[in-house]
Amino acid sequence: MGLFVFAFYARIAIQLTQEQAEKIKRELGERNQNLDGFGIFANNVIPALEMFIPAAGVGIGTYAAFSTGQALNAFTMDN
Image (cartoon, rainbow, N blue to C red; front, side, top):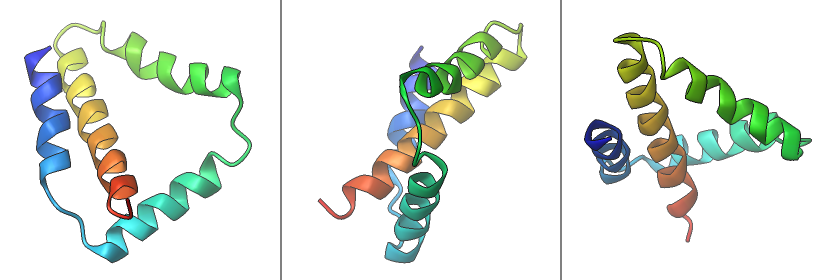
């Protein structure tokens, strides 16, 4: 749990350039344009289940936290 929180916070703390932030926002907006409730569930259940894999689950969880921090960082740059 601590590693997950650390990876999330570490990626938020690393500043993105404006170009990187815009690219992330554009790609996520295009990919998730028609996303509904089931799509959100399916998107989140896959990494959640993968985290139960012994040893590899820690790495998958850390990557998921790092990626989530990056997306949050990109969206907060404009606000």
